[in-house]
Length: 445
Length: 193
Image (tube, rainbow over all chains, first blue to last red; front, side, top):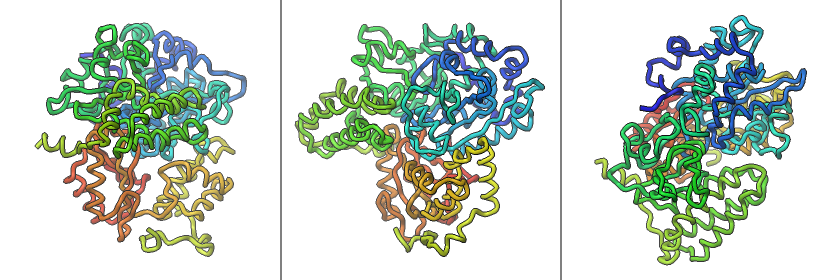
């Protein structure tokens, strides 16, 4: 059984209330930080912990914090990115819904470290009911003196509020999120300047993912060095994995980084194997934008070593034979799955979610969707595989924000590892669709 | 769609003067504005548009957007460019219950397409259409963060997960009996995570 630091109490009745959360050791990191540590000491512990951004990019959190500009007389902001929208990812929703105070505690401790007196949680609009749960928890925290003026009798004051979005994947990109928080369209900003210098309303701002902020609490309590002992190498600590697709036990799992992928998929502790005794075909390991890998490459690296759930092991071999840990959105597909059609759902998604600022992304995602549609209606030819490859290669690296890459990578990986499926459809001039509902429910009955 | 749909009469100029938040909604709007520093009330736009949509029949007419602009003291175009960017704001009339079925990868892998077809057949409408009685609008949505409980659909604030045909029947029957407009801002949400 791996160690759990974030959702170990998720099954405790009424853990969403302040009373129960507090009875299980909640808000201890706020007490420890505000009463016994300076803001810089908190930041140092986060640096020592090796914590990396849990939203997908994996950038070292302590380093991101240390970039924050601190000009005299200018307010600084901490903004929590709760815009979880990467297909396959639902861990932040789980954490916020089950244990909302874990995020609020992390926001207080982190805001103290950064010297922010006003912080925001920007949550995707579709999670409106989760925003209600957070708002209720925030009211409790204010009433108990964890938020507001002179917290715990110290000089430190903090106001915290939630803002709901309007439905746009792009707002998970931190500068688009800030635009949206300012009441504008979610168009990513050109960088530099980075938010650490000019973020919300032009002020220095740190934007961190929900899980990242929640992880600050155990780091402060156990110390950065202890936290860094969990995991392997530069993949320290625990990570929430959202597991979905054709597995027996879909859900959110907290793992110690370093669990073998094979164990994660097949053990009863985690996914419990493939549904209906089917064989594994492919896995998207870190949310829709990371490269899909076939069974042989997701279980073992090209060198023949066991693939582990770490940033490094999943990336081993680069994009030729590897992938990324990303957001931890782990989508599993069984042997009957059409990779081409799954890719179509991803590409349709990116086309829908492109903000439209940059031509390569706005036009390219649409072209890719159209080409993939030809495969699904049986009108594609072999040339279309090359055309699809060509289009994706002309998006990557040519856009303001990483949505371009996110749209291009899954297309490239599907062609790289499953070209035969595209060619088969093109040669047979037909695509045979199957009903997953009937298939899965028939076997169930 | 159009004029036969319940609660979707277009707001002409004469009615514009009547377009006003209820006292309760105005209180909510004031609370939202108070979360931002003075002069930064434009930040309240997205949440206030949700309140407006719920208040004014489930969609944002040009008049409703102009009204929001006047409440926040910003230009009407600043409201429209935002309302037209985000998918949750309806710029055309919709039914009382908007069913949004997620169709992205994990939901597709678990039969979302069949759920859509089942609802289309049951309600006698296609995706994007509203039933003649103005009760339901059917939409498809991109990933709603419910991949582990797929297939799923959202209606207002509620997440309906692990859908089967039987579950869809029960949910739709329930909404129909209830006969209420469903909003993202509703407090009586259901979720099954």
